[in-house]
Image (tube, rainbow, N blue to C red; front, top):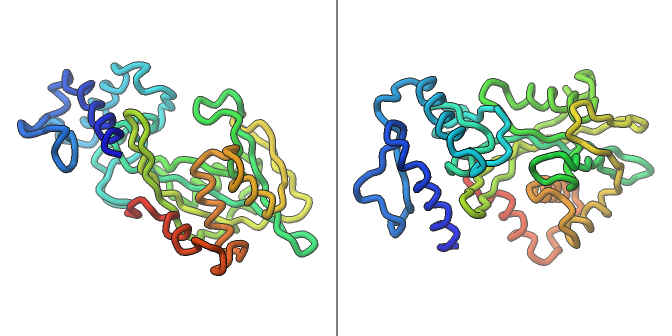
Length: 268
């Protein structure tokens, strides 16, 4: 873990040339408790100033931050608090900024059994191409509520009309921290369940999903247990579904430890 944190901290070295945007304290060292850190220049006095300045830095870094989405995520002290500035979505983990998303389990009940609709991500996606995903999931931009964002994603990703998607139930959140290279991904995922009518067939509208399949929940659990086919954070949201729908019982070894792991990041 320590070597991973040092790698993340070294990303700051790429920011030091931008002295009109970032300030590095004199006692800033990788050996400190929190690792390397910086602040924004005090001349950047408004959220708009900060957003534009940091955006120019991200653009200047080029391929160091791949998969630019031209979509801003909010930077705030906690969810729903005052937004300090907006940051390019792809850059959020490089700056260690907490990001939020909505993930929806689309399920149906048939013959006394539960089934989950799964999506297979397009091979053209810049992140996790070809992997299994939720029926609907998406990052949460700064200018839309969780509920409205979910309804929008339902239409774009699975062709689910508002008349159905508005019945999706918010069922909590999962959180995690994932460190890889220069990236520290700190995510909170708001979870939703949508019980779909038998006979509904999802269809993708935005080109981000290659195909859909309806899979028995027990088989989905085995895919998570035995393979790496799913986009990693989907495992958490589906595991949460398995707990809430009684597919994982307290008698299972490691029940509480697994339950606790679903909220291993800060939910704030």
